[in-house]
Length: 84
Image (cartoon, rainbow, N blue to C red; front, side, top):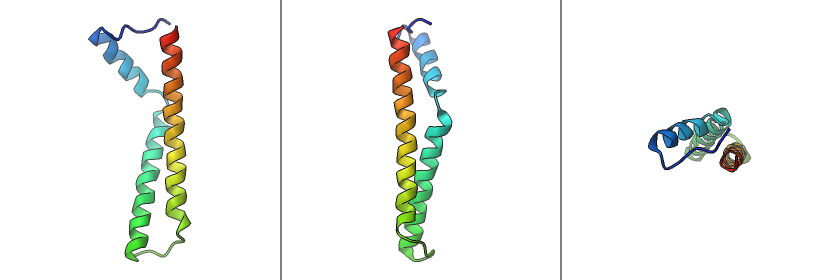
């Protein structure tokens, strides 16, 4: 597989679509968990639910790790793809 010509708008758009298909579930689940953690933190702050303080932080921490894993995988894919 050859490296795409990023100066060509058609090839750049195709490569952008290709990059979006690298581990989308990991990245999107990270975003979802971060939103859930923020919601739990808000509900805990308002006093509507009684959960330990580490639960929202734990959810956001796991979400951060998932998002970083997805970003690292995309970066590695991009580096390998541009090298060939």
